[in-house]
Length: 411
Image (tube, rainbow, N blue to C red; front, top):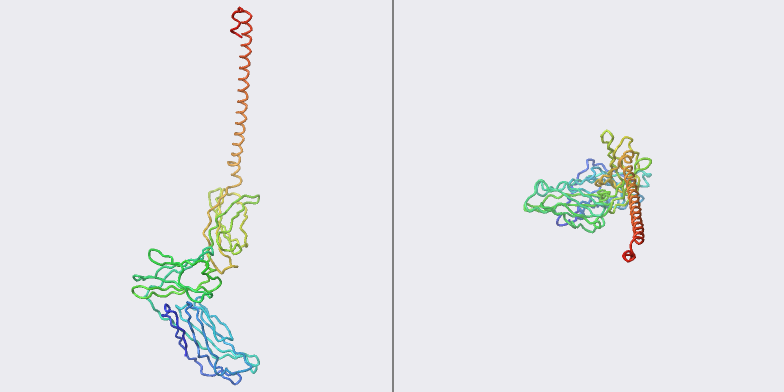
């Protein structure tokens, strides 16, 4: 008999009913005179954690009083997200695993005995498989499309989607999420609303949990009935997109060129970043040469490279991404603004020498102006002195020749 826990009302369409398949073999596996029976009392419960399902079973009756034996259970389940079987051995009678509730749930389990009477040899019971195929409910063609999430600078995350090919009237989407530190699922804290309706959800940093399954579900309602439910399970650290590298500098050295930049703003640690440098070099013949180089040196925000011998101009752009030490994958940031330099031989010819020439001309002009003013002053002083001398001589001559009665005039 399979027991099922109740699920939340909004997930009532999903009811786990396991279909037990009879094993092909009817022969019994024996260990120390005890039959290792296949497991039958299986309970799978969905607590409403959007695919994080608990599997429970009981110890076979024939093994309840078995002594001098280690009883373990080998559980296999099909990971529908990675499309491969996963296997685990446990002495417990319960295990929790993540499933995509839009696909069949497949579970295999058997008992493993290791007893003193078997001389350390494992004895495995018969493996039994259970398969459940969820019911396909909701308006046909109404499942959302193009769902993706981006964790911008580890400051906030946006998950967006497009409506399905069929969008009935009065359609309204709802997003729910859950991770292992939450007691229950919660609805989107801030919907992204466009003219067509809800098309995304914005999560603040505080609502996220890294290095753990972050489960999401998007369903909806409409005048024609419920919309098809879509399930997703991500790890948010694999969806980081750093901010743009804004401070880029290009300098010339004796060896060539050197790039320096500052890490992007945001909450991404510097040691978690790798950079890609794109160079675009214009040659003397007018052709352009482009290259890209990924730099994986931790916390290195500089890069030196030789200058092309026959180049006239070189431009550089830089972008960043979370490296493989901090996440399995991520998004490249947008490119920084291009920073350019010019050929070291061309620059002195028309720039530096021109500047020196202007300075020399300016200094010469100032010297000439000062000399001109000094000469003009000397000339004026001489003229004044000459006029004074002539006037004095004239006055003396007049005083000598004119009658005494007129002398007061020249005093």
